[in-house]
Image (cartoon, rainbow, N blue to C red):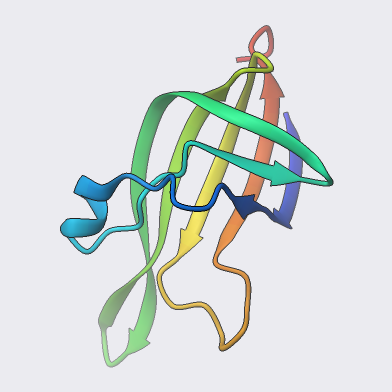
Length: 101
């Protein structure tokens, strides 16, 4: 498994509309990373993570997605719930070949 933690560019107008109607980020149909396009062919898992908000409160920080792509790789992506103004919202966290997982 390779740790990456770099921004990606999701395909425009390809997000999951049902998820977005629920107020969640819509997993795109594909993304571009380092100038190369990767089409998402399967959602393998999804989860959420929280961050401390002080005084024992937590807030939803990231939506995580483990996906398979048309290149045969398994990618872990996340979407920041609140990106800094002008900041990147979608990130690539890790990548591994199917034979590793």
